[in-house]
Length: 46
Image 1 (cartoon, rainbow, N blue to C red):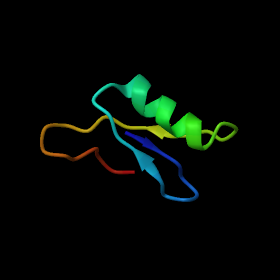
Image 2 (cartoon, rainbow, N blue to C red):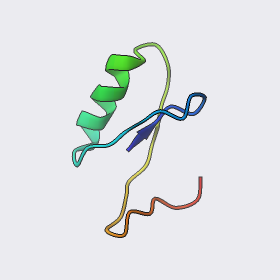
Image 3 (cartoon, rainbow, N blue to C red):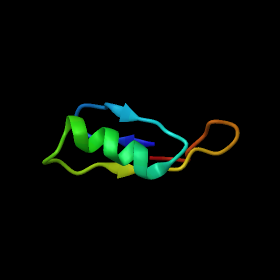
Image 4 (tube, rainbow, N blue to C red):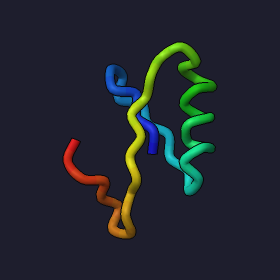
């Protein structure tokens, strides 16, 4: 899961590189935060 911190937009894919590509396509010049989602859907505390 890639999260754009300021807008709260997020991009989810089973492949982290694909999630990153989706985020970069919409926001090519901005950084994102990457998190892994476990089997319960939780990604920990942000």
